[in-house]
Image (cartoon, rainbow, N blue to C red; front, side, top):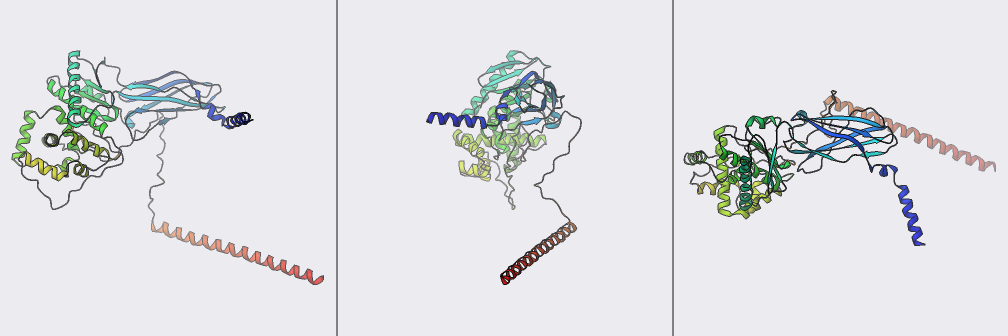
Length: 469
C-alpha cells in the first residue's frame, strides 16, 4: 500500500512540474557556431540555430574568464528572421566597452526559444583573444607558459628561466605562489605591444593583468638584462594581485612596486646612486605619499621605485618572510595599511618610515602640523595592471555589452538617486496634498450622513410597524 501511495505522489509531483522546466533542458541544435576577431577592436559571434518550431527569441550570453567578486554574464539580443532555422550575428565592440588583454579567455553560448515555448541552450564555447597575424610559438615550464614570435627558442627559454627565478624568489621571500598557469605574451618591440591593446598608457614596457593570469611586454633588442628583469617584475604583480585579491582591500603602491623591484634581485648602479643622493640631500619622498600613485615625472618616478625597493628590502631583511606574508594577508582581509602594519609589526606607516630612515642614515622624517589624509578602500578596487601605474582608488565597472546595431538606446535613469526639486514644486505638492485630504474627509462625511439617515429611517419604520400591531 505504501509503495502504491509513494508512486502516486511521485507521479503527481512530476506531472505538476511546469512544462517549461523540462523544455529548458533541451540542447540547442547549433551549427557554424564561431567567433571572428578584428583584433584588437571587435569580436563577432555568429551561428545558425535550429528548433522544432519557429524561433521566437534569441539571446547571446557571453563574457570573459577572470578573477572577480561575482559572476557576470553579459547578454545581447541579435536581430534575426523567424523560422525553424535562423542565422544570428552580434558584435562585441571593445572600443566602447574596453579591451581585454591578449590571451584573455572569451566564452559564449546561445539561448533561444520557439513559439511552442521550448527553450534551447547551446554548449558553452571558448576562444583566446589574440591576433592571428603573427606566428605565435609557445614554450612551457612549471606554472609558466610563454608565447612569442620573431625570435629564437633560446631567447624564449632565457625569459622563461627568468620567470622561474621570480616564482622561486617570491615564494621564498614573500610566501607568494602561482595560482594556476600564468601566460606571458612577449612582443619583439614596443610598437607591437601597444597595437595589441586599446587605450594603453603613455609609457611602455610591461603590463600585468592579475585577474586574467596574463602579462604582456615589449622587449628591448639591446638589453637582455632589462628583458629578464621585466619578466620578474610583472610576474610579481600577478602573484601579489592573486594573493591579496579582495573586494574592499587595497595594497599600497610602495609595497606592490617594492616587492616587484625586490623580485628583480636589487637596484642597478644608476638607481642606487639616485637613491643615495636623495638620502644625502634629504630629498626622499614621504612613504605615505607613496601609498597611492607615483609621479609622472621620470626622476621622481624612478626615485619612487628605488625607495619602495629599499623599504621592502629593509622589512624582509629585518623581520623575515613570514611577517611579509602576514602583512599581505592582512591587506587581503581588508585591513588598512596602518592597521595591517601595526597588527604585523607593531608600527604604522610613519613608524616604518622612521625605522627605515634610521637604517639608511637619512634625515628624520618631517612632521606636518596637519594630519595626513589617508585613502579609504573602495568596494571594488582595481589592481595596477602595469609596472609604474598607480593603484586605482575608485571602482572600475565591468565591461558593458555593446550592440552591433547602429541605433542608440537612451540610458536608463537611476530611480534610487535623489532628485532636485524647486521651492515652487514643493509648494504645489503641499497644496495638492491638502486638497486631497479635504476631499477624502468630505467624502467620508457624506457617506457617514447617508448611513446615519438610512439607520434613522429604518428605525422609524420598525417603530411604526410595531405601533400598528
